[in-house]
Length: 453
Image (cartoon, rainbow, N blue to C red; front, side, top):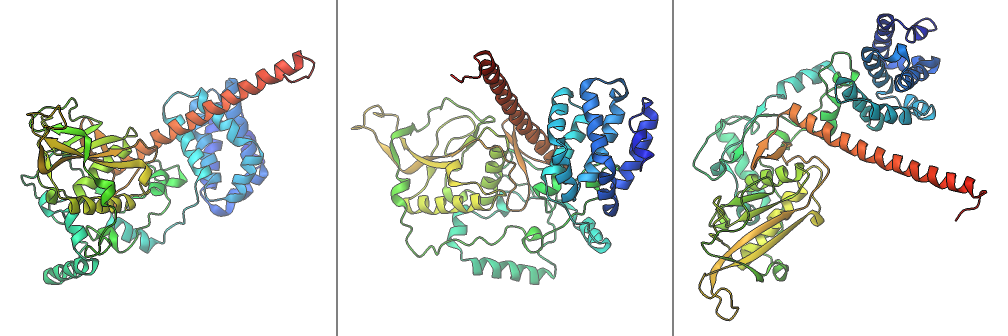
């Protein structure tokens, strides 16, 4: 080790790269990571990063810096002792300073991975048998159209046991497991604006962050684990309160008399990245999976949005038929959808509004206004969020150009990376601003003889 480490700092970039490649391979072995770090490996890598920031000639080669970051990632991966040593050596401030000096590219991507490895928890390597099972389960998931979905109100009416028994009978009749795939069947439902794409099974946010396509990175060889039970069983059983018992929340969902829509007239907004317009005329046809996808897409775009039921794609008000009891059950179903996201969507992040639909004649006067019986416009308001949300079957959707798009695994990973980069930049800007404020304060104190204002 006393020979390899000095070679990483020589002016010849080719020699430095070869030395760093040796350290990359050593860092792949758990038993050698602490030894490399304790013999000065971490300090050497931090020095290379600082030399690049200062503009030293031997550190200007980005290939050397990229190999340095890969080595650093491997030494920190799954090793608490090395992470503590890296913190004591002031490694994090050096990386944050380096990040501000880099342009977007492969080197910056490697730097962000080092930061994620430092802040994340270690993954356990899979056994070879588990790895084979993982590859077998890594098949494409397909969705069925709205005909095959479960209505949101039907979920509230059905008991969990009856849903489970029905799934079991279906499985026994076919002689196959419930996890078998079904082909896509495209019908005439109003779900055509949901662009379907296959996604790998059993996704999780941590796994997506730890996977990579580079052979040099240890986080690429981290094992993939799969949960059992619900992951391949289609729509999971949803446990809701017994619908035979009264729901004492009706007063929260009264129709708004202040806000109303005029039947047949055009609203000022249209379907776009912030608005989804659904022309469903009966609330019994509002499908669980469709609503779940739409919510997921809006939450992941980071801007929030509005989902309207009772307004068609031409922005014309049609209204949706819904009774007082159905308003309560719809809210219960929406609450359950939010709980099944990963992470959970809190109550503070969404709001359900019911607005009257009235006839055009005399609508401007409350005394002559004629509401259309049992028809209203339902608006689901979603607040903006900074997290990436996965649905109950661990799929990810994004609102793009007025449509809800299903993302591939690589697209989800890129979305997470870009979102975390923005978080790091925001935090770094906050720290820099704090530093400037402190320097100004210290300068003022020195000029005034050490007396604070």
